[in-house]
Image (tube, rainbow, N blue to C red; front, side, top):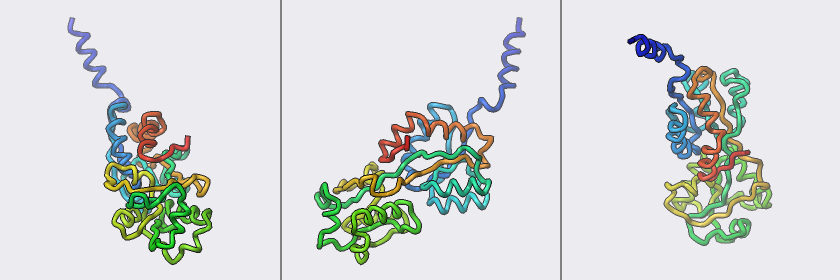
Length: 252
């Protein structure tokens, strides 16, 4: 009786495509690139699906999406850009959510330069430069300005503030010693790639509005099973543990 092997082969051949492994193209904000790279193999192990990551600034990725880049998922550095994509019909309604909340820290490459009182470190008469990301371009820059305002130092430090175009450039300014200290992403300080522990003061969260980073399913990925599965995975406990280890909150 050969009918059963033949029948089973036919059934496997006719299996719906939706149960087969797929690959999603994910646009990732540069500040989350390292965490996303860690999440990708965990996602594959959990689901059998794969993701291909493309990283860049949120503004640059937004422009590429507008020009028709075939991204399926967008992990933004802010909440406003995914909201804009939803308004423009370039993302799938109801799929946006906060996948990470950035944490701001005042960091110096010099051990002992910053103690338990961040305000005292900033008020040091010997301080030449403090770096922040440009508030007109970067969410972390907005948070840094709000933190300095909360400390009553925004006006006082105007002559000593130097700005990076993004949070990565700001971190580099401090790491190189171009600025003695700066407001940077905690994730960058905790990263294994950061070769200098230095000293830091984690800015209390009540000193600035939350640095929400939102994810959204893009229109191109509406029918991509891997894209939807990846967004589900980001909401799960395994991803939350990785996100926390990289210095982010999850907003949950």
